[in-house]
Length: 233
Image 1: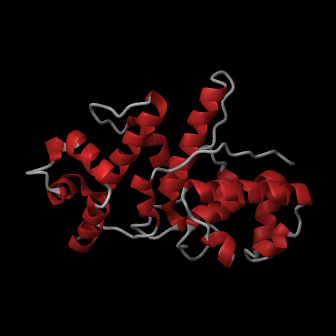
Image 2: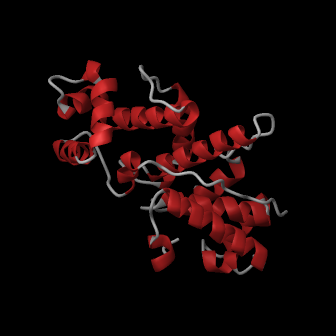
């Protein structure tokens, strides 16, 4: 099996990339961090004040977070940006219908990451933008990036520990499954106890090049290059 994978060039707005490096919960400390991120971004602050006014008291971000919780705010911010990507303007009213598939994607991998970690959600956002970009290019033959096989989820569940950067792990496994096949990947991960260097050694030069190019596109989309500098996959 050698299915070609090519990510289009899309970018996660900086109004969401701050979710990558912080673990949140519904606590005062988390709310302060979120409030700082919002107030330091004038554009997103204006949009939030306009779109979320029904949840806010006297333009208070704390009242917004108390009403929605940090995930409620996160989901609606993503919805806002997705709407803009599709329609070229921000919505007048918010609905989370367009992030339901992202939430489903995140939930499927919930065993791989600790509570408060949104990296899989951001990866799902990236994949959703890839899908929307694909639809713009070819509405009748667009590619689904959010679909994952049961076999891949089975491999993920082999892990006994939750990881801090599950997005990079998932990306790696998606490529390996495409190149090696689902059954072989499961067998090899079990045999080599998750040693990815062993698995990568089985790929040919073209497959490695394609995977690196896709990693570069994802890294650029979230403004992150640490994975290439420190080899933390």
